[in-house]
Length: 225
Image 1 (cartoon, rainbow, N blue to C red):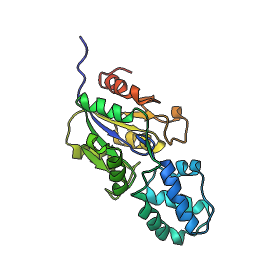
Image 2 (image 1 turned 90 degrees about the vertical axis):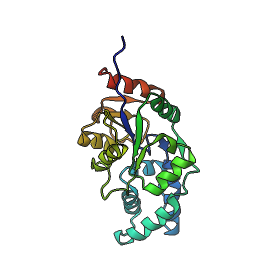
Image 3 (image 1 turned 180 degrees about the horizontal axis):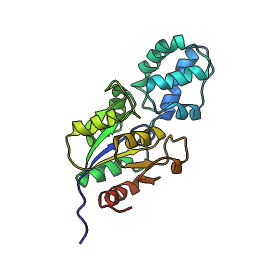
Image 4 (image 1 turned 45 degrees about the vertical axis):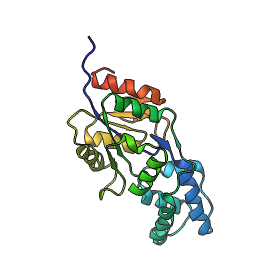
């Protein structure tokens, strides 16, 4: 007899986990820099700056091009004004939507916890028809703090209102630290924006194809793996 697998509450990161948004972020960053008469950044620069929210991204972009800190608020406004509509170059990772569908079909509840601000998060979820999978969305400006503080992740779980086992799926050092701080198992997607070696990040299991995710969740909840 197969062991009973409890229905879980599974939280996902967004950028670098479900979607590759770096090309759009790169493009709007370079629009802002061009208006300043500054040199552009590379796509790899953009990937490296992603993860700690829009303000941190702009701060790193600005510092990389020697723009004074006094310009931060103005540049952030210019960046955010473009951010919500920046979906044309973004792609969903292969198999991600199908994995979400399978997890929902297995009875699990899904929520989203991202450092991306709420408005562009909702825009990209609607653009790719992903919003239907998530009971709760917590963005980078939903609370006064962002990941790796565990509060946004815990808020996402609490708002979903489920008593089942909790799991977090993400791609980065920030996500790994958030899961550790929240005391939940972490499943690491290795094809996102991680900077350190996968072995150096605390995780229960890792995967490079979304086809593997439903099985990893089953194994985790059944106490295997």
